[in-house]
Image (cartoon, rainbow, N blue to C red; front, top):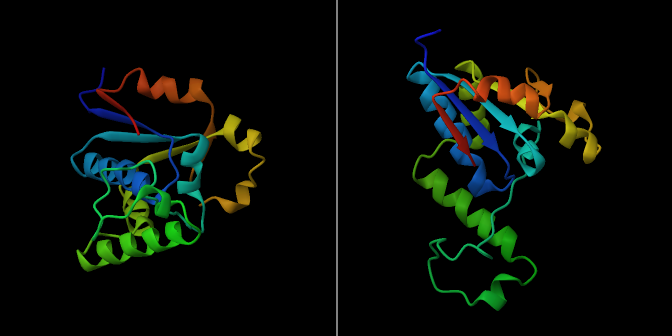
Length: 156
């Protein structure tokens, strides 16, 4: 049995705010010496696309800090999601937060294994040409081989 610690992450969300945790945690764990793997399933597969066009919305997320209170009915209006996304990206940039592309590249450089759920690729009829190079495709059983031996398993 190896002394190397292992971190398994299941990424299921494809929004801007939910995209950061898997890459931050994976790249940090890899830097700390963990053998790290992320299993991207359902909407989490959006994080593996070559062109990231992720959005954020305050709808259904009452904890999202807003510069001023916005009533829920206004948050559902056309254009609000684009505005919220723009505000979030601007805030992150002003605070020096790395972009998702940078975090994803950092994870790849740190040898984080990224596995795209084959069943989800088939279900949504995704074209694998739209995904970044260097990822693997597999099912839940493939992921469980790694997760079953991991020290930490996170569902994000």
